[in-house]
Length: 188
Image 1 (cartoon, rainbow, N blue to C red):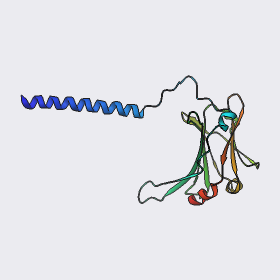
Image 2: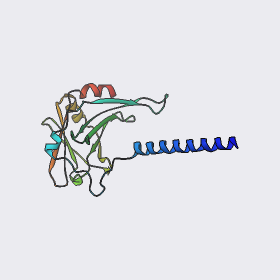
Image 3: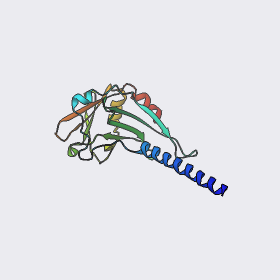
Image 4: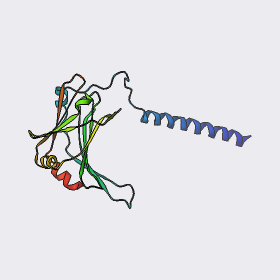
C-alpha cells in the first residue's frame, strides 16, 4: 500500500511537471498574435527611412557535418525601428557548383508583385529582380549577381533596394556598402 501511494504521488508530480513544461514550450514556440485578415502593410518611404542604422554585412559559415565543406554567406537587413519588422534581408552566397555569387532577397508582404524589385548601387545602372514566391515571412527574389553588379557593390557607397506597395507607391530602402568588399572577400 505504501509503495502504491508513492507511485501515485510520483505520477502526479511527473504529470504536473510535464504539463508545466508543455505550457512553457507552447508559450515559447507560439507565434505572437496577429490578425490574419490583412497582411502587414509595406512601409512608406518615410517609415523605411526611419529604419535604424544597419549593422553592416555579417558573414556566417555553416557545415552540414564535420567532414562537409564550410559554406559561407554574407547578409544585411533593414528593420523598422518601432516594430523590429524586417523590411529587407539580403543574403549573398557563392554557389558551390558554379562558384558564382547568388543573391537572395527577402522583401515585405503587400507588394505589387508584377513590378518586382530593383537594385541600384549609388546612381548607377538599375538591376531588375522578379519576385519568385511569398510566404508568411515575406516575398523572395533570387538572382545570380552579375559581374558588373558585383564590381559596383564592391566600390559603391549605398545599395538601394526598391519595390512598389499595393498602392503602387515606390519604396526605396538604402543599404550601406561600406564593408561589403571585406565581407565578400571572406566568403569567396
